[in-house]
Length: 263
Image (cartoon, rainbow, N blue to C red):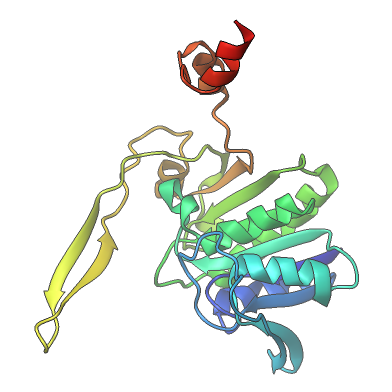
């Protein structure tokens, strides 16, 4: 299997190399990752400055490609320039810290898997509870198994997987649940401060998300020490509202001059 491996924690991140070490013995794995931390960058791409992919030696001599851009940039460059052909699977992670609920909208890890899906390739975003992580190798072992299954079964165009793993040994994990993304109102805060020159600045933060006890929700699944796997679609259309809005009286004045001429 040909695998492109990326992340948003940067090319030196421990979680990325845990996956590489687990897969490289049996698959062809190419690392194309940001040259620095790019967490919470979302699906941003670089348009107003040059992108550079620098080949660097890491991990006992293996050469990976460090990109001065975002995780989505890494997928685009990997597909179009670095790899000779499109990979069979893209794995993004293992990210230090869960990506559940509303965090999917901000995560560079999730965006990389989404970019892969938009390019017609299987995309798997992988995160582990953090920020202090002890079990990257266990997470990598599970992902190696999952990758084989997903490659065999396939995914529809425009669908990717978001996987969240408890920070514990595989033998102590409760099991695996297929879950849905939680959509909850976030509890956020902005901390206002003054610098030594009495100028105002802000720190943006977020309290922990609350997921309740619904066993189908990604965050609740993870809280109960299960691995959460969520199939996610790139198509963000709300189809219920699409139908409902057909009956809304919108745009009375749009095209009014044409309507007058037709009278």
